[in-house]
Image (cartoon, rainbow, N blue to C red):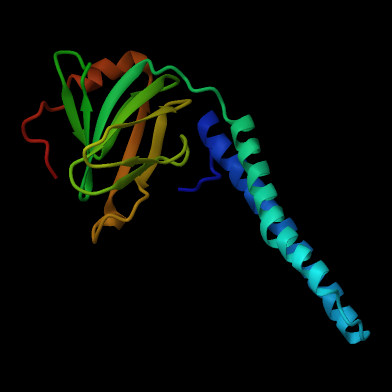
Amino acid sequence: MSAIDAASAGARHVADVWYAMAWGGVGIFLLMLALTAVAVRRSKDGDAGVSARRGHWLLVAGGVLFPVGVMAALLVYAYAKAPPQDEAAYHVQVTAHRWWWEVRYPDAPGGARYSLNELHVPAGVAVGIELRSADVIHGFWVPKLGGKMDAIPGRTNRIVYVAPEPGVYLGTCAEYCGTGHAVMQLRVIAHPPDVLDGLLSRLPTTEGVRP
């Protein structure tokens, strides 16, 4: 799982911002190396340095104005590159537990159905995911499909994913939640829309769905 291995428009946006931050960091690092080299060279040449007043403004520019400018530019870039939010045409409810995922399909044929650590969705359709937590804060993240969203006790958060084609997309809990955090994995399985209803009808109802 990687933030730069994107399969959807939402995930590509995350990857683009990551690349911008990475290359921006490289550029700033090289600039700092160049400024350090200039300072060392001037010191060897016997340069007495700058005045206290000029040094103060250099500190303000380098320590305040430059970082603020970089962060503002990154914020504008991220918002400008963000794809439009798709209107969800399919809805599921995900409840995070220590250390497993409970998935409820409220609109399944014949009434609500449930699955454990697997989320079945139609390929190519915007899926609205309602996130809740039964205990502590968890982070719901499927890197190939988009960004992370926290599942917080007493609160419902929402995120929209689109799986562009049938297949399996791996997800994980991206917020440390205790000793079982590393095994709190999830599989998003995208199916052709015409076969999804038949699959959901074979999933269990409320009873018996526990780890």
